[in-house]
Length: 512
Ligand code: XUL
Image (tube, rainbow, N blue to C red; front, side, top):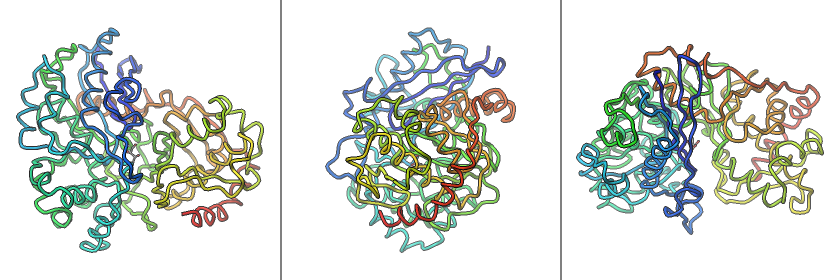
């Protein structure tokens, strides 16, 4: 029995999906939650506390501790890890890990008696890792833009973006020049974990690499001029780029202690959104994916390559070849959870009852839950924005106001990609009937879900099965991604939202 493992190192935890392509079944799923299972790392929501709301860093050792814990708990649960013939994975995008000259030798000689965090700690040249939630690099974005101009957007698929790795690296170089000088290698979360798995320096893929403002999407390689403008000598600190999904190396002997076979092929890791594009079975242009996670994202395969004229959307490499585009909203599931808790209701009320008690359109009441500084559109000052008295409103009105505003925002900022008649919805909140119906009505499109909400980890497993097992993408999608639920738009509700779209856009713009 050939099994393939997908790992998703996401903002709030590490997830695993194990697939058996010959039977078309998901054999096991496992998860570690950073706040619940590894509280000693002080990252309950996936990041370290910081007095500056624009700064969001995590402890990279936490991601390693999660890998040890996840594999040992899978082994303890009797998961047949010895039958795995390929491993793939993905990481939250943009986050960067800074490593010194000891890194290569350290990963090449991991001692199974010790754990990963203890062994990798001396190889870090920076204790913390800025993650995608960080918005503290406005100055660096302006500096890079002044040096490169609009070529940055055309070449890298995005204008300079605060959370993207290039501006973050520039900030590190400016604020800690000796730490930067001591850095031999800068990895993304994805390529860092892949390196640890293969016991060698891993390349990174064009899906995750394009989230750095450093990769030229015309050449599918680093852009030397942009790299040098970002920070001196940066090119030499970046890993190689892998142009499509391929095997990065064989599994390090360290992992034999969990019952895995040393030498098992490990595919080059990608970002969580590109992995989710694969895992939701939406390989080709025409199907839009809404991923409802810590961040809410909208993405789709595109052909030909084009960039967002408004500058909020991005273009990344597609793990199966070609390109995908993406728009990211920082306030996703944590914002919904806060509105639910503050309203004193349970998830059942939030997910369905609230919608039965209210009407589509909510009488024009909207609430944008920008508890974190929002990135689409750019709203650096955090706080909820509503066009009615939110605090005194009934819970059902608040909930509909938030869900409708988020859906209208997704629609508004995905218009540059096109009109979609089919949406695939994944992520934790894809089980909410109220959210699914609202998305169907706001987009006037059929909304589908697939069997697992963990489409990123599933995508990692599918990438492993393709790269290590030679299984065709279409065969994998047919086995693992058939739609399990379909929600059709209600024509009257769709008309209501269509008539609100312009006013909503003006409201959102005025609230920034
Ligand atoms: C995408 C983005 C987030 C992270 C975390 O640009 O910043 O979606 O990948 O999920």
